[in-house]
Structures are given as structure tokens and as C-alpha cells.
Image 1: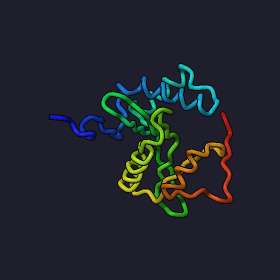
Image 2: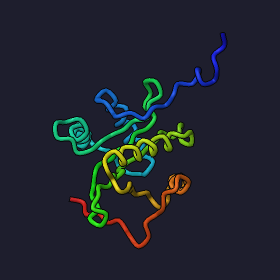
Image 3: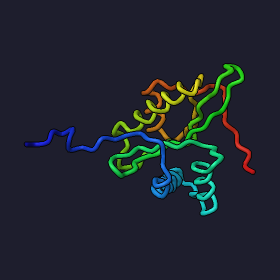
Image 4: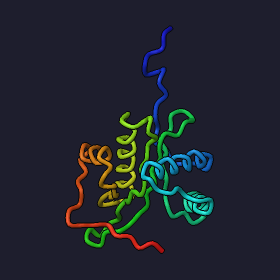
Length: 159
């Protein structure tokens, strides 16, 4: 009996990252750094990222897009707070999908799951930043109904 197209293609699932996923996640973090023309994490930063994700005092949450055993992307998020809404905000630090799998619906799957998580957490909003030259990401965010914040600029003080 012939398999249908749906049976041939493994289904992509968005799942909570596990310790065994970490090496592939770091490969994707380094791919993101190269995409953004930045230095990737050094060995000390990699160890901190592991501890902050999987340690006893977790600071961040991480999702992965999996197709079978392959990890195609990741998202890092954490909780912040809006004093004006008096509600939590889900802040999306990173969302990244490997180059060869972009424009295949994985980004939408990530955002569907992140919105579900934000609702479960009682958040009033989801926020993130995007580089102004990343026109593909900006087009995607516009397509899903996100809007850029006007009158705000992000600043950074590196310690």
C-alpha cells in the first residue's frame, strides 16, 4: 500500500528543549550569530546558557522545532512585567530557524505555541526585538499581525 504524502513527511513539533538537544541548539545559536555577523558564544557562555536553561535555578525557557530527531530551530523566552498592564509579558529573546527550513511554516508553529504559553502564564503581551535590516523576519511578523512599537528605541548597557 502506498504511503500518502502526509505519512512520508515527518511532522514538525514544537517541544520544550531537553538536555540532549543542547549540542544541536548551540550549533543553531552559532548559525544565528553568523547570520547576524556577530561572535557566537564562547565556551564559558555555552556553559552558562546550559545552566540557565536546565539548572536548578532556571532563568530562561527554551523551545525547539523537531522533525523526528532533527532540531530545525529554537526559541528562548522569559518572563518580564508590564507595570501599566499589571501583567506579565512573555519576552522572546531569540527565535531562529535554520536557513534551509525557513518559509516552511515553522515560525508560525513557534508563535502559535508561544502565544499559547503566554496565555497559560497570564501574560498581557508578547514582545521581541528584530534587527532593522532583517526584512524577511519583519515581513513575517507583519504577516502574523504583530506591529512594531513606535516611539521606542532599545538601548543596551553591556556589563
